[in-house]
Length: 557
Image 1 (tube, rainbow, N blue to C red):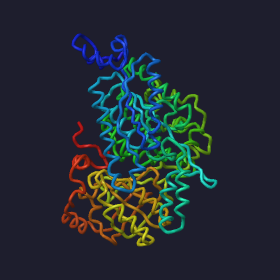
Image 2 (cartoon, helix red, strand yellow):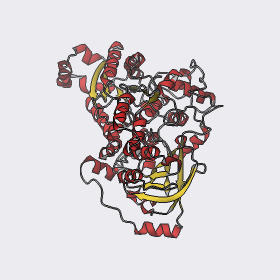
Image 3 (tube, one colour):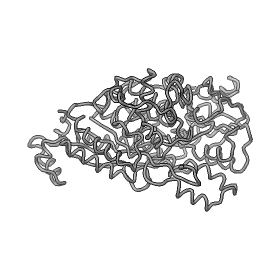
Image 4 (spheres, rainbow, N blue to C red):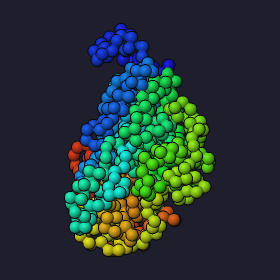
């Protein structure tokens, strides 16, 4: 039995006071001296639908822990909603909050010495933050998400929050009455759960399942389904088994597991943010991973799903079609998975897929008949992005763009230009100083990309930024340009009128400026004053690494 950790706080005469504190919260002497102590990291709050219901998930986990003979102790982490943070200064906060979440789980575990951890999560930065903590701590751990929201319904069509962001330009131009927007708002989010597209929240919850840290069903069971509660209870039971078996996260987070996660990401057409997060988790796990691995696997992994924003289907459709196991089954049949990878279920991944039904051919296609021959994400390089850049190629039909640069120093000024009719067909919008350091916090550009789509500009205009994008983004949008502007990357010296080329087929992002001229501009460049000079964001900006390495903090060992 792997219970050595809690012995630090409950064994021997020196720990009388410790046991007294545990008894004071309602446990017996036998409880506090004999049963595995299980920490439940609950990210519940009342602010947004992805996390508002997590107390019910946590309660089911507690029931499972008790049933299996463990002793549950709940603690909390922060959780930010990217959707609510979107389009204003608050968007600086979500990505840096990932590090705080990982740190808070780490500090609680080190201080209280739980034998095992259950990670109760759901949305964008919370899931990777908790996965980072699991890899760092290497204490028996298992993850359970709160599940996906059901799609909304409006005028005979299913809708979600993406429709609201893209409706904004129509309201601004007087094409859509404000009252109708208000009615859409009520319809778009019908209840609790993560946003119902294959945006970052659902992407990461699916990848946790594909990588073996969560039980089958974690990625797609809707938040309102009784199956979600049953899965949470099973998760609570299983953590006690993991403690007794001594199955540790670093036995699960192998390079094979990360490659399984990347394969699932490409097949699902998932969020570009997952690249940041997988790099960060790999960093904590001590697994070598780089952008080239993502691109190699994208070239050989077909896209098997056409989920919103790539296509018309929602997460509930994928659930009914067999969920993540159905996707993994097809990848395994095509020889694109490492089927011997261990999982928290106690069985190799391949064994979990043995009884899974074949792909339905509509929601999940076979590898022989995919939606696309390549995965949903491509990595671009060139003189504009020497360390790499990221594009969700499944969300745009345009494979080549060549056009003059329109340079903006923030998302807000770019949006104003689009709404004001000051962007021309063929332009390449450059939004810079929005990277991990420059933002700071690497803001999502969903307001910009939604405005691009809502104004009908996505058919001819492209966007390039050192910021990042929401998993809900669609259109020709290149993000994560590295090095970022604040570190003196080439994006910092683009001038209005410079020709920018985005070539997805050849994986190139090029500035058509001669090498001597580009070198002279870079030598003359001086960093601007930081946008934030105090508080946590200032510390994050000081310590954050490149997006190409996951935007983790430099002082990590």
